[in-house]
Image 1: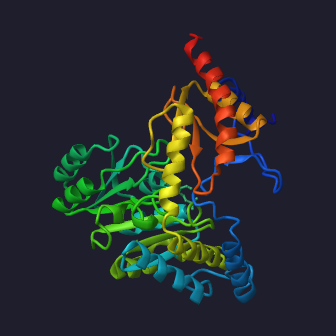
Image 2 (image 1 turned 90 degrees about the horizontal axis):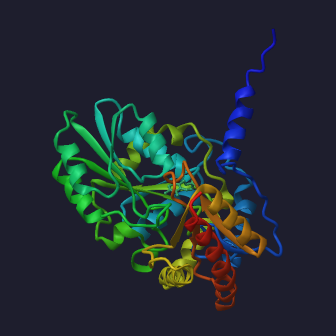
Image 3 (image 1 turned 180 degrees about the horizontal axis):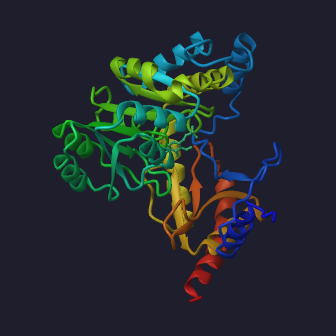
Length: 384
Ligand SMILES: Cc1ncc(COP(=O)(O)O)c(C=O)c1O
């Protein structure tokens, strides 16, 4: 008897269609694109001529690929310069570039945890931190969102000698901020290391976009480790860990996603360096992102956010999905977050602000969003 061992995939797919949870890939076109409120290109630098030139020059000099793991042939002087420049920018002693932000989180957490360690992670931590916990072989406790007292208690009651606390600085779904000063105080009082994912904080929060850790005056603290992606404000690709020289050396020796992964491609490194140069020259970009986020929030009728992320909760997955499709049909590209990315019943449009959103674009956004949200909220108000 021959049984199709993957028949369950069709059943799962049918369940997702019924629940409004099917996901689709849609290729972008490079011309005539919709107004972008969906990407993480917060500073609008992906197509900035200097950033594009940075990528092209790096490719001309170093080639298309990095040719090997960082420890073999995959490190160029371009990687080392980016590490030093970003470390200096955020006020850390040192930096270590990874192939992605995901890999940076997996590498940092697994190398600093291990058996005999307790890892306490905020319930809203990014999926890459969640996966890092799973791979860490440490005991993992998930603390309620932004609950410093709960974390304090968990740390205090532990039997393990070592402990890590994990949090995003700006949470990716809601755009809210972690209470970093209190978290660091509690981590230090309990002899734990605080790891902060600044994926959505760098380029947006802090003096000239130096991030939320810098804004809280915690840059350079020896028991604090920053992880970040180069794919959002820095308009490229890749990840970085920013910490002390001691931590950097330990990661080079033991972070598996550093050792067993091909080094970040030169184009991405060159682009990220150029984006940092542009941001340093025009530090007001960070404030402009927040101002544009406030504009979007006003248009959408939701509270002003503390980050570039404007979350418009609509409820059921299908309502959020239909609203996103309606936006797209009228030239607005918006994010749509549904379970499992967000809790059941809180499906939403996720709008992201860009420093270079124009007034003309905001006028169009106001018209389209006004119509689409009125319809979606009307539907949400009708009991199913
Ligand atoms: C908070 C957070 N951390 C890490 C990542 C992963 O970064 P990357 O896309 O560079 O792998 C993302 C999203 O991409 C993110 O939103």
